[in-house]
Amino acid sequence: MEANIPLTKVKAEVWQGRQLSELFRVWPWGARRQLTTREQLEQAAVALEDGRKAEARILLEEVVQAEPRSERAWLWLADAVDADEERRFCLTHVLSINRRNALARRALEAMEPGAIQSPLLRVAFAALEVGHREEARRLLEGVVQANPSSERGWLWLADAVDSYEEQRFCLNQVMSINRRNALARRELEVLGPGPAWSPLDRQAVAPGLWAGWQSPIAAVAGGRAAVGSHSIPMALVIAGGYLAAVAVAEVLTAIIEPRVGLVLHVVLLMILLLHTARTWGRPGHKLLLCLSFAPLIRLLSLSMPLAGFTRIYWYFIVSVPLITATFVALRILGFSRMELGLNLKGIPVQILVTFTGLSLGYIEYRILRPAPLAASLAWREVWLPALILLVCTGFIEELIFRGMMQHAVTKVLGIWWGIIYVAMLFAVLHVGYQSLSDVIFVFIVALFFGIVKAHTGSIFGVTLAHGLTNILLFLTMPLGVNHFDILASYLSGL
Image (cartoon, rainbow, N blue to C red; front, top):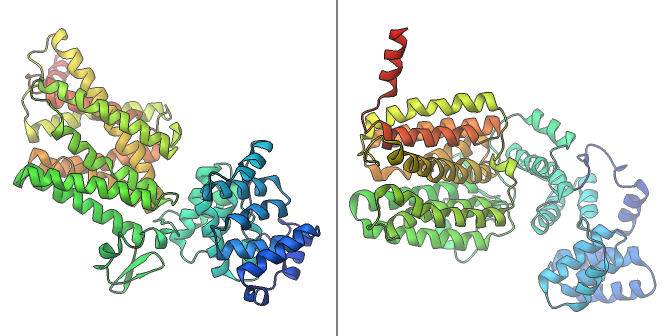
């Protein structure tokens, strides 16, 4: 993990002033670029043989900027850099281009494991220092795409971007990498709360496959869609499009024609997975992978052979492949337990939130009035259904929506847009009850759960509240036990 790195407001002493001066003395921003790539490689080879590593590095840095997949340039650049972190980066990049490059593999194995750092960072910093912000932004975007965990890259990119929303996103990325970065924290406090979107969004929609999908948008510039006199971040346009598609599929499945809805869910799942693969390595790919759980949940619930089982066991049977997919996705995404909310922070608040499940279950029962999922209130009849509802609806759904999905969405759309978006998606998946009142109620509850998770950083309370809500909705209330009546009679007896 990199130490706290100042923004460019802290001047050249971060890099040694001597090194920065040498960089600008050797770096000819115009003339050297007129050489062809082949000529630059030839001159770099001669410079390396003569021991002029600084000159070779400048030439090779130009080559890898012009041709990011030049295997030979990255391999030679590994010999031209001085720091082990930069050498590891170059060798790792060679292997990402050609996994069979034995020379790079042997060199990397000979080195001790450690951090990696792009050799282009110093060039980007130099560009920022002299006011070449577009050049710096281009370089830094390449750095964070190649190494999304580059604290220094995100921190300096925050100074190269144009909008507060992009700066807020970059600083949030720094904090997710190193929560002790005091400078990034102070900068975020100065910016205040608000939306955040990735500066990489302007590249997030891959050409070819998505060109036709972009065509209804009036214009795209810098990762935003122009609508009238306002600009909308492309991430919000894409996320909104997928939300609308899920809503249409849910309405078709539950109300109009189930088979057409199921086909649409299948197509939507395939598109989301393809879109995730096409944008892999950019911050938006985590959002897309999480969104794929919306059609996946519906496909599992409608396509598994459940007819021979009691209804309460449907939840358990569907939850098995769902939780397996969730753990696989979490392993790929690399979210920590703290980011998912799997902790016991703010226990007093969590307990209060848990007891809101009593009221929520009562209200939703008055809306839906479902049939009971148990034959009676005898302990042997109730304990297993209650446990299934607590784990398979309370825990798993909160882990997916408030844990995994909300964390991914807020990273791209900002905290409030993220909470609202996940709440809308969660509500849309309740269209199957064919009750507009229930959809609105679920949306409000999901907003409440999302705010609690964002405020406390834990899903402990909302998991128990969610499970308790469903236990009351499907077990105790349908079997005639109204806990509010019991409480009233107890209080009147006092």
